[in-house]
Image (cartoon, rainbow, N blue to C red; front, side, top):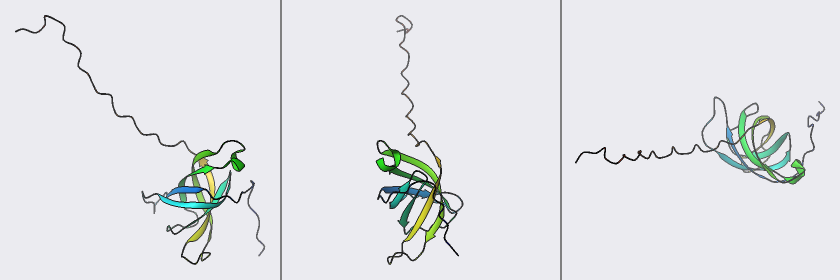
Length: 129
């Protein structure tokens, strides 16, 4: 069976730090850290020992390099889906995963603490001795 190329965007062989978290039924709140081996505006390939499988959605943060953005590097937050895996590609038990970006998302900003309430001043002459 012949392999068909599904990439629609130019892919760059660039290592970029990646933080990701699996989403869905088997999701955990633990962030995993890895490094991409190639990146495009539509996806990325990375290696991880995290228990992942094809079809699983992830939320990821990585800095898109100049080669991808065409301008300044850009910290990117996205939701992606694992579309292929390379099992047994690494002798240390890690696997390679191809992720297709489904949507770019705004980073979650910390909620500011509520402002302290300052009581209104008491007008003179309202307190009785």
